[in-house]
Image (tube, rainbow, N blue to C red; front, side, top):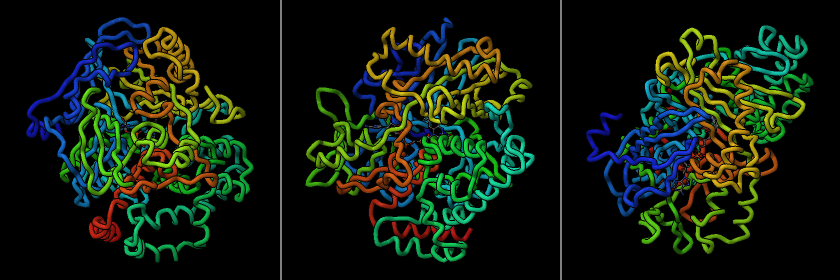
Length: 605
Ligand SMILES: Cc1cc2nc3c(=O)[nH]c(=O)nc-3n(C[C@H](O)[C@H](O)[C@H](O)COP(=O)(O)OP(=O)(O)OC[C@H]3O[C@@H](n4cnc5c(N)ncnc54)[C@H](O)[C@@H]3O)c2cc1C
């Protein structure tokens, strides 16, 4: 990819961070006005003090490509934001033949899935993921499932991500420490060890109830859906598959809370209930009573199939982002980084372009979109900021949108640490930690997720070292952070204080981690808000199954479509990729023929 870039580039744009204060927060607003038009290679060099450790460390963000090129005055579709949702939509749109440009505020693509690196002098470079690390169904050597939208997109654009398969991860629970395997619900699995035969029998009942729902989810792939008359043609070939579902009415259960299924299956075993709550929470930010059954149908199929494997993308989650970017560019699309969209322009009730912030004086450069503007912003950032003019949208509707329940934020800790190959092999790539089930999985400082990708991937740290990312999964309240200045002493003290819980949990898994650590970075809800341009640093909408509807791609403004985790049930990479697919299929009937061709190919597999 880099070689390919070099062929096309005239110059790499690099900028240096002037100041770096013990965190990965970057001062994007301070860039030079001309920097927005670079195709994004940025190289950040900085000195900082990390977690009380003095010394020169260099943080570098290497972005895949740079092109000294200005955007054209008009595209068919302009995509605002390059999260997995925006990139997925752009990739499909380019494949369908639309002329597309993506504009990203950040200096690199991927949103929550972007990566960053820290160079420690005399040690080398450490590569970290900022967000997702749990993946399945991506491995190009494993047959793809039509129910996995991200894999559908990657296969469609002819891109793949090298994955290291694995089957186990660690659980640190009040009941003890366990190894999770696809056999979790059997007598030899964790449930058998904790709850015995009765728990295992009840689990089997739940799985039996879920089977037809898994089939229903797989029967109609997201790629076949669209929101115009063309849907008759794209969904028709898949409908006979529904006839094979034992009880076709079962599929109506897909939109109800997963707890209903647990109740109907008469699941009484408390440990199994707790485990489902945690799985649901990791998936959607809500326990079983708020998580839509369709998400669990897809997940349980991937987790507990007898051949289930998880995928560790070699090089980190950013390799998924890079694969999407490659696909977009291969099909003629363009991506512009450091390009904060300050306005989506609306004329005669139709979204017809964007204004990019260049500098405060000239008010920005305009780019037109002849068919659609596609927003990858969260619901609060789209309707609650000035990106949409107040007259474009009746205020009552705006207020409605802004009432979308909001998921909490994160405390993150990234650590590069000393560990021999043998030591690393004693660890698991993931751990889930719960302190006290009685407090609920969503309680503050109670659930923690830990990812140590170096267990499978030795490309992320210098030899003799490893990287990890530990975080509280959407349980950190923004309110204690909201009034703090990022540069204030108060902020740094709070950051230090709130990260201690993560260090404490980490010590339960790697007791001498503090001595082993050579680089560390703490991220807060402020970091999250700032880097992902996310209102209150939120994980995403906490829409309870059965109590609220996701908007899917359409909006009340003609020509304005949405994708990302505010638009599709389930926060997570597969869900946002699905939202991107739906949005791409919703632009115009021009996509109908290429979509049908794609579906024929999928069906002939
Ligand atoms: C810590 C953490 C762990 C996670 N773990 C997993 C996991 O293991 N597995 C999994 O499947 N999912 C996981 N997720 C969830 C998953 O990463 C997200 O759901 C997904 O990446 C969100 O994608 P998105 O497209 O909605 O948008 P985002 O990632 O939020 O991207 C939106 C993009 O839009 C840009 N933007 C915003 N405003 C503007 C503007 N005005 N102009 C230009 N650009 C703008 C932002 O800079 C950003 O790049 C995790 C998330 C986090 C935070």
